[in-house]
Image (tube, rainbow, N blue to C red):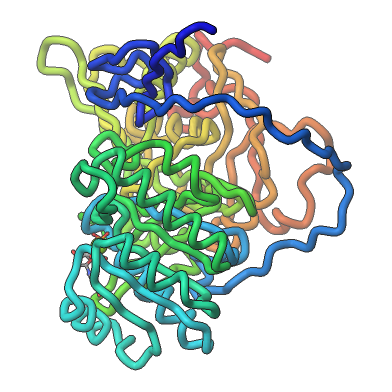
Length: 458
Ligand code: TYD
Ligand code: MG
């Protein structure tokens, strides 16, 4: 019989090697290679396969009472499941979960809040400030996962358990320090196992590293049923909760909150918040009718052009993709004759939100063209549409819900791609002027008033 080969497994990404390696080939992390225990092979049981159709009921949901959170979760927390809430330190994770936990406990369900970061006193002070101190929430401060599991094994009627944070948790059977890859993984595994066997909804709080990934092993993201990211700019008061994984619902949903002196307040109408400080009639500003998940959101795109003082022109972008900006500048220059190659370009999505949709192309182009021509965009207009390399304006998804949102906020005109099928846009745009454009040059023309010679005709 051949001697069993020693096997090493990267604790971060799971890459298997035959020798110990200092740096993992798979993920590039250092010191994550650990020897996997070799076990004698036993034959397994044979599996019984079943069909897709069955009588499984949808899992029971636990509503937190915070609508923005419940929506991102796909309709509330799921019993016997685990969710991970990630975010930068100080962004408001503990505040959000204390509010959610208190809200669930008020419905008569048993909720535990276990903190490894703050003392009972600190949590009580925060609760008092948030006006939650009367909620029947059960608090504990510990970092010992063994104590948590021994206590919870005996509990029967728990609805929700919050662990703040998974990086502070510690299992005494593992040698490494809290927050290390192995600890986080082992603690996560223990707690998730407990949630599944005891039937409560587990919420783990996790910190995010500078590069934006959840600190600790990425494995944790695979172990939980839902991953939510709480993000935002600490300079701005609003926070976005974004679902990036959900085994029980759609991802890409967002919840919008505002950090106030009495905790996080739900923002039912985010467009109004993002547009609150907009000044109309300024060259270089355009309103984008965007979508975040299934939710329409209006955002202001600002462009500033400044003469280049020598050297390579600057292109500085906040809240959008710089590669996409470079492409749009090239299209504006080559296809529409707008000279921008000797100009410094600054682009900003006001409010601090990050746009990832290509549908923002048209709004960005409008802001740039408006700045270049020193002509303000019409303050009552919204823009959306993707732009191709020849300058053509392409269709984007869900034009109807974008238009509806714009109309709700009092916008009277929309500049958008030509519709493919007649009659596709229906009641949404009643009373709104729809300006359909086929080529970016048509938009540039609106600002300059004269046709551009380089435009390609469609
Ligand atoms: P916290 O929930 O402790 O963040 P995290 O758990 O993500 O590290 O939030 C901390 C910040 O929120 C802190 O800088 C103060 C601010 N804050 C408010 O503005 N209002 C409030 O009511 C509370 C509780 C916190
Ligand atoms: Mg915290």
